[in-house]
Length: 249
Image 1 (cartoon, rainbow, N blue to C red):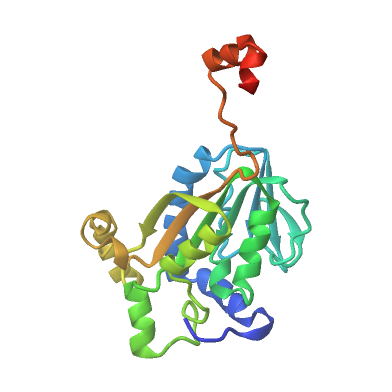
Image 2: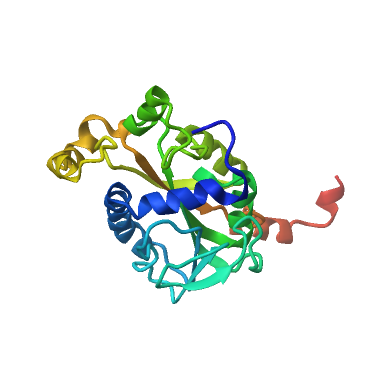
């Protein structure tokens, strides 16, 4: 959550390496599980993932026929890969039904532009799914207290949910779903993390806003199709049958 981000994607590279460790793998396992509940309800033919972290195919549960991963580099098996900057997508406007952003906003040097590109390529009524680190979580507090912001997963510029919702509203997105994930503190001992798994079962009920991760789903509004109020049939018939002279007094 540092004020500035590393140039040249250095923070993104370190975050990818962190996701390959025990804590990152544990975190992404819950993210993939939640996406298996979310993505099947988002229909379409074309789904795009911007950026990649970890080794899981996060689009595997999407019912869309085409899965595409766009990033500057990738070793992730699964979806078809296109090497490009997520902030300048090589896709036509209004051509994609689902855009998945897993932590890419946390490390992007141009998060506003990245969201604008996601909005541009989405068809009306298409969906964007955003996974990000929660600034109000125990993880965010750990970063603040220990001053570890230069280390993954604390090396990026985390975007709070309130700020993200404001950005989405400005881009004419409508929030349709939100959930929180991972209530365990960021500990290194795998055995202790396993013992604290019970926190995942009670976190949503007792302290939902302290989770490490948020998952937000938003729908692109179908602008430009303003409905025209229909004229009641009875009034139309009266206008037609009215004498000509009556219209002029």
